[in-house]
Amino acid sequence: LRRFEDGSPSDIGGDMENNEFIPCLRDDAEHLEDRKLEGEDVFVKVHGNFAQKESEDLETRDDYRKHGFLVMKPEGISKDDALTRIRYLLDELVFDLGLQRKRSWSFFKTIILLLLVIYVQLFSHYLGQWIFLKIDNIPITKIETGAAWIQLEFSPLEFEDYIIALAGGPCLNEVIFLILIQFTIFFQKAVGNIPNTISKFISLFGFMAIFEYIPVMIVDCLRANWDGDFFKLYNYFQNSEGTGILGIFLTVFMYVGMSIIFAFILYNYLLFLHMNGRLLDIYYRLSNNSDRFFLPQDMEVSTAYVTHVCEK
Image 1 (cartoon, one colour):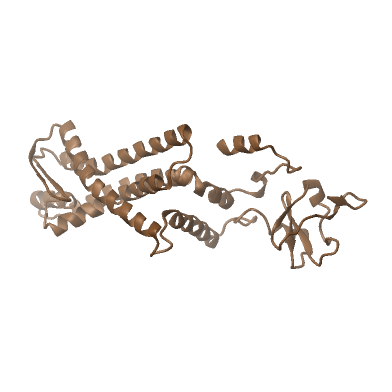
Image 2 (cartoon, rainbow, N blue to C red):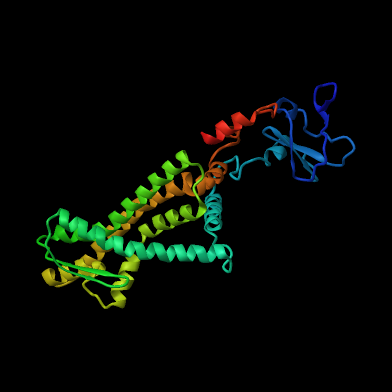
């Protein structure tokens, strides 16, 4: 940097395109307001530790503060801003899963992984149901299997036995998802970056664990199995009280309650572990203020230190 007599920079070397950041000192940045670079018909705008070339006139300090690392506005978050933040995160997730191009190999690979996850969860659902029934010593009278379904018939003694049977499948799928999360943490610490295909499979598994009762209900309807999981409480109250409306309400309430808990776990996985934490950068830009984005004033940081910060 060459400086004026008052210490402010007069020129920054290198061929720079518009809207490209130019490193400068934080103290120097305070003197850049309303100054032009020598020999160039552009203004410099300042944000944090960076000066940026810009073709538009910036007249006040507030004009400079509009430009920075952040997506969030300094004055706070409005309702529209909150929707924008959600859109940023969803767009990034759709991109990570390869769903933005419907004719690409990445898109078809995601669909194949999704179908595989649904198929696996159909069987793990009934496995979880069988485990919960065995733990509660509920007699299992019949087991039938097919290419994409398993039917368990049991002899419940109390109303709670139905609740245990309905909760068994979703809970086991969520336990498997938690095991996959622990595998991800171990793999990242022991090896490094987890392969994208494995990361996609885990995220899809967590997503479908939230709604795993939907494929089960679809299979039961296609098979005309009106004694399936979604209809158990309806049949119970229909036989005992003459109306099954309360059974439908309790079934929906239980599944929605579990889905909310499972969605919270999936949210944390996607934020901190999915694709080796790719969404975390967007989250920080959407949530933090500019003071959290610290860059050394002299812009001279060793490779070892940068590696250490990234690994943290």
